[in-house]
Image (cartoon, rainbow, N blue to C red; front, top):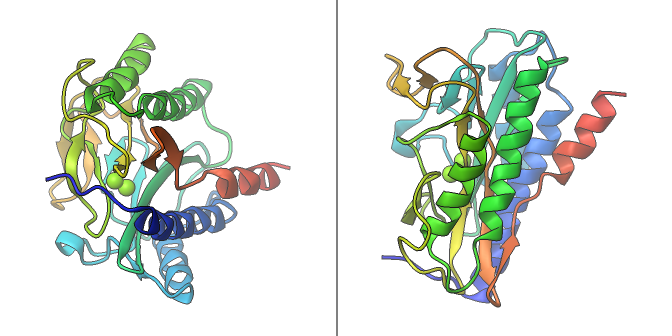
Amino acid sequence: MIKLKTSEEIALMRQSAQLVSKTLGMLAAEIKPGVTTLYLDNLAETFIRDHHAIPGFLGLYDFPNTLCMSVNEQVVHGIPTKKPLVEGDIVSIDCGVLQNGFYGDHAYTFPVGEIAPEVQQLLDITKQSLYLGIEQMVAGNRIGDISFAIQHYTEKHGYGVVRELVGHGLGKEMHESPEVPNYGKRGRGPVIKNGLVLAIEPMINLGTKKVKQLKDGWTIVTADGKPSAHFEHNVALVNGKPEILSTFDYIEEALVKVNH
Ligand code: MG
Ligand code: MG
């Protein structure tokens, strides 16, 4: 069942989403060669608790950490480790918080130092596909319209669209109805109505769409070992139009400073 939110609930959800945005922005300034994903995970947990919230992933389905950190060929659900990041890596950071009873859940794929142009393009196209999907989140459209927009744009660039993992409704639960696949047909699926809050999150591979799970029971990797990108926003339908509750502004302001 889809739980539509009131405007008061959406206001609280914006706070949760913005705390994730600020956490990712804080991390953006710290990501460089030599840093470990476990170090970043600890920073994020402290930051979230200092802001009177609870890490949303820690313990969820028994996940062991605050952040899902997926490096290079890891698609999503990577577990933070003591292995340092190296120049040319990419790291997808997915962060969730629970604050005032509502979850925020969004993600960004970061470059570590200089990355290959074809990988930068993967990041750019995946992020763009997220916004194209969001544009389709208008009253009267269906979930399939979001799905189709993401799939059409990314496949046009020759990329693989992951099938096994999807976006979702968001609220008092981290994963609510409906599922929001990153592939699909226009005009299919549930109708989009005011009060709907979604986590839209394209997971796009440079090569094959095929993925597999590592023996740790969590990490999803590409079957061909090529890199994968993941961008996620939280979006509410207000007055028939999509309102993005999260923001990449903190991240992108920090990245500009790191690169100058
Ligand atoms: Mg997420
Ligand atoms: Mg999500």
